[in-house]
Image (cartoon, rainbow, N blue to C red; front, side):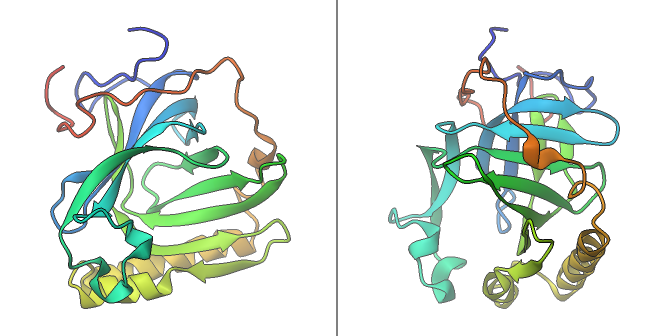
Length: 227
């Protein structure tokens, strides 16, 4: 395997990834279960307690679109989750993003920086706990999120999308309650200023020698499929 190739072979049981290794961070579509978001990332740290990865600026990523080509954020909320969709590949715009996930937790924490290098905020992305496979990790987004700021204040994000997803049948009443409970658990970590918020990750800088990962042709393959 070359230095800029994402590893996409093997089974769900795999050894920890080494720093600098490239894997895929994917999300399944809430309606169909097919992969509709795929981001090649570089491993920063992979231990029994934490997976940290870097999304480099310019990384080719798969993202969902309305079938007519309309970006999701431009589609009216009332039809955003009911119209047919497709996917497209586009570069990751703006600054890079550091993603942190702990085994079994129903969220990941993303760190954002401004273009001048100053730390902007953390973002708690509520989602299914990550499922590991040889080529990366898979999850399913739960629409509701939490923004956390350097002054330790926080706010709910995308509550309108969470409500619309429930109306569209993408989030059941039981799942909605689980998501809210996960959000409350995350808020407790924020208010006690526990890891990862107090772990110093805002000082992270990527290794300048890391190349921008490539997107493999089989980015949407089943985790248990062959090479």
